[in-house]
Length: 227
Figure 1: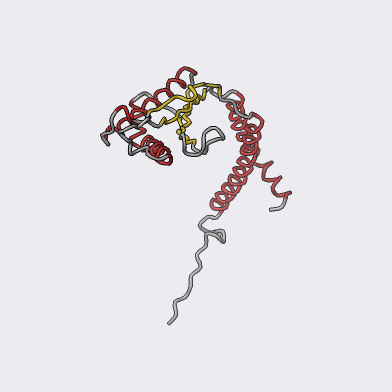
Figure 2: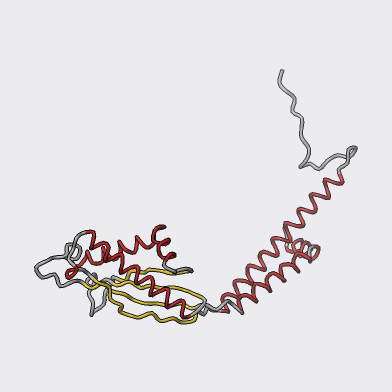
């Protein structure tokens, strides 16, 4: 299709483009006035125990600390864990991100930490969701050690390294508007082309009556059978 033919099709199906403009404007309005939400973030750390004469086999070396933390994360990310968090009142979007890379002050795998995030429409609800996740995480840690019959004094514990802190979620409106405009333009042009082709096919089929030859695409060629 040449550029001239494309322009003529768009002029014929101007009403499709008008509908695309209205839908694009509605999408742009949602981008400019999004629903307010808050993202709360906290960091927890697993503290190794002072074992003394009662060693804790789950934390006798540095790497198993991170392994235990990741095992609990997998439990909470499973369907059963998601159901448990939902029963505890945690809804909406949340993330559990392991942070075991370490820094100059905390070498790698020495003190495995976990970043917990929760997004809620209200600030207080976001902080409450993060605290609830931390509480369930600590419960899983204690249950895991209790299943190994580890003495209470020798168990690992969860410490809140960075308390929950919620902030309003703000995006880049210019990028969002550019994306909506691009989708509206491409979608409008494709819809106009599809509508034009659909109408032309229906017109050809209606014009091909019983005594008139049908369009080439609707004709069935009879092929003689070999003798």
